[in-house]
Structures are given as structure tokens and as C-alpha cells.
Amino acid sequence: MSNEIRLAFEHPAERADATAPDGPLDRISLRDHIVEVEIGAFQAERGTTQRICFNVVVEVRPITGAVDDDVDRILSYDRVTEAIAAELAEERLNLLETLAGRIAERILQEPQAVRTFVRIEKLDRGPGALGVEIVRSVDDLATKPIAHHADTTPHPHVVFLTNTAIRSPNLPRWIDQLEARAEPVILCVGRPDVDSPKTGHKMTQRRVDLLAIEQNTWVLAGRDDRCVVVDTRTELDWAMKNGQISVWAPSKIVLDAVDGPSVGPNDPVALAAWFSGHIDASDLLLIGEHPPSHSPVPVLVQDIAQSGL
Image 1: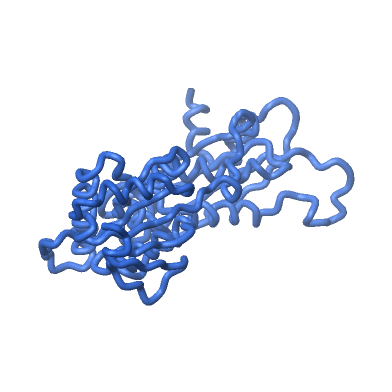
Image 2: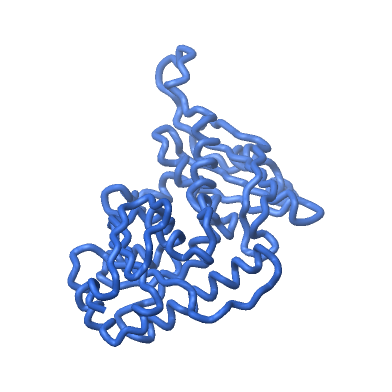
């Protein structure tokens, strides 16, 4: 028992040694790789970075034949650090467990990798290091399909509706037209025609203004049952693949984005343009609004009369 407790707190390299499967496996390791990143589920962890320490061991298939001092014949240390960097850049995460799992999966896609130990620790959240450690093998991934996002991700038609459009009695008829389109449809709105509470603090005001937009999404959803409020990328992906018209509630995606928008909720049209680029939309249609100064996707503009609303 004492030996098991000791191993529980050893470096992943020692854990790998103690639990090695039949037959010797070579190992490469990354020790004490520290990165500053925004991560965490607590409110105090948003809007600030903290030090995260990574320790990773990868067990690899022995190389047959001579290595000949050729770096292309081995699993490079760079592939491990690149896996960490790629997953940190993908999106803001709340849980170390999620990050560790994704890093392990990425590493195990390397042809030589057999098993990996990933330990991640927060260095700034208490008097000691707080973290998780996971073990994954290629057998764990054998039945899990590899996603090919570039081939399957839909390119939605994003539509921004003004408050006048939301209130129009002709809105259901126009939703009929959107429902008949071949590509998925996502609706965006701005803030209601009432002032949001003022907090006097930039970060908290941003949250209040995002929530004001979300209140307006529910107003739109109340006008037509086909408009479903959605706040996560997973829900959006499902909706786009299943013909659902979504209304974007922005808080989670905006706050979790690594490449977050440079504009705030006080400029909802520019925010909708950022969102359109973030989800790789085909275009952005503005109903009764002027185009933003910059957009990563083509922008179409219609006035209320043209739209049939």
C-alpha cells in the first residue's frame, strides 16, 4: 500500500515504469513545461491567466532498425509541446480533465505512440499544486471515430435582426422563407430597447450587456417556436446538422473564445460579424442595419421593406 501511495505522487515517468505492459517500451517525457493560460470554471479565473504545469510521458513502439541519428524516425518532443499548444489554442476550457484528455488523444494519433500519461497542475490556485493525471492508450481510442471537421462542418447563413424586425407581425412568414433555405440558419440580435444596468466596471459591464442580448434572444424565441436559443458550439453544430433554426446567445462562446472579439456587446452588429467568422459562416445578412467597418465574411444588407418584414 505504501508503495502505491508513493507512486501516486511520482512523476508520470515512474508511473509508466511501474505499470508497464508486457514487453519493454521506450518512453519520451516532457517535464515541468509551464504555460500561462486562461482556464478554469470559477468566476475568479475568467479574464486572467494562471500558470499551468504539464508533465507528459509517451510510451512508443520500439524503432526497428537503426535510428541513424535521424530526427524524422522518432516521435519528437516538439510533437508533445505542439499538442499542448494546439489544444490550448482551440478554445477556452473550464476543466483540466478536458484539456488532459484532448492532449492525450492528439498525442496518441502519432503513429509511434502506444500509451501516454498526462499530468496538468495549476500552480497559482492554492498553497500547493492542484491538478489531474490521466492515462490513455491507443486501445482506448480504437473505437472512437476521428472527426474530420473540414469535410463535415456546415457553413451557416447568419442573419442579424433588429428589434423592429423582431416585433414585426410578419416575422413568422419570413421564418418560413429561412426554413426553406438549403443551408443552416442562425439568427443574431442586439440588446433590447431599454438601458442595461450600469456597473461602473468594464468586465462586469460586458457580462451585463451580453446578458441583455441573451434576454432579447428569448424574446425572439417567444415569437416563433422554430427559433431555438443556443449558447454552445456543440448545440450549434447539432442544430445545423438537423435543420434547426438557432438564435445565438453569445455569452459562453464569446467568453470562452481564445481569439475573442475585439468589439463588445455595445456593437452587436460587429459582434455578429465576428461570430460569423468564428463559425465559418457563408455570409451575414443584416436586416435594417448598416454593415460593420470590418467583417470576415461577406455582408448582405436589406431594409425592412425588402425583407418582407
